[in-house]
Image (tube, rainbow, N blue to C red):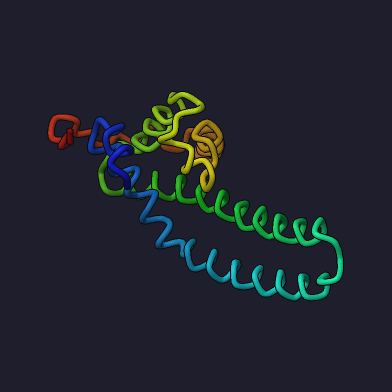
Length: 158
């Protein structure tokens, strides 16, 4: 969690949602899967590159770009899964499950060219896309879950 993201938060439920998202990355072994995939992609890229050594630069660029696109697609799927699982973790811990979607809404409201979010969008889907996927996945199943928000005891940093 970055200082900038923390400053966007207003309640403990939002913090629980974000931390639930990060914990979900660990429990779902997303980083391990990405490492395994990138090792495989690297090996395939090296094999293809050695075969295409005598070919022109365009072919070699296509090989590298294909590997990068494939790896990023895996990361985006992991982000959607971490959103869903993180929301459930926050609810199970007694927090309002809508904390994470609230944070995503705040992030989506930031200006498109904001330099604070440029790095985030290289590895994460846009918050609006994440909200849409989350809404579709949850589909009203958490509407009756009532958890704590705890805005009054949320620690603000300056």
